[in-house]
Image (cartoon, rainbow, N blue to C red; front, top):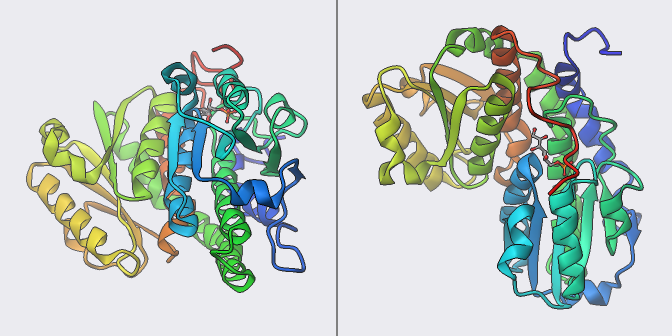
Length: 369
Ligand code: F6R
């Protein structure tokens, strides 16, 4: 049932190209519009939206963080991301022109469900991104986009995350389209870029072996840090979360620009720091800034593990380990940059002798608040 893989997690990592292809399948209608699965909202309701809140937990929250960049960029609607467990307790300002997007693989996460219910009580519209048909969160939402990622058995989320990202992009495009900001041809262009992602992921996975070697190298480090900027920041957080939950190692993700405001003091001789570098083509300025961050931490003894776009030679002199990912438009880059971090965590956990699919103290679906 593990299809020849040692762990479900490795199988699910390998399934990601197909999983995201399945998320995309049949989403673009003949008129070039994005089709949701269940819509109990009118286009007018969506045109009236003046604020988006994304609520989710754990890995799904990281997908939401990426979505914020895409949704604000494409729709120009203010978008906030919030941990579902915090949302209702701070009495957020919600009304019928607020769209709350709840992201959940299982559709049963109690924190997310309670956030959704609170939003509905305040008359907000709720849209679910979910992997589990007929689960509670989509049942209670006004609209649903299923990720169609197939069952995820390993406790640590991998393909669910990538399919959540794709679903978030589709929702951003749908909102932009309904509101007349993006037109069929522009949406089709982004969808075409998304459709290239399964092949790019296959290419990436075919060359993943060096990440396994690296895992054996750093498995005894007392701490591993992750840095990123823009959409690379949530990727850094996700990389750290994977390492904590699977390898039981101390790991932390930072926005690279925050380093100098404190965390750089953590860097010691040999501290592994995974650096998620944005494409030099996209937001060039950010690329150069993170390259100087990498220089800086290396000068302080960090062992730099650099995830960069193929052909990015600016990082070469400062990378102790260089992992190239296929060229990808900036907003879509988390679909490729996350994958080496998943493999890294999985392989470190295995090298440390842990149960990769069933980490201690964790359950696949958290149905208590
Ligand atoms: C991490 C992980 C968890 C879940 C979180 C939300 O690998 O799996 O952080 O992402 O518990 O679960 P769902 O998406 O089912 O609401």
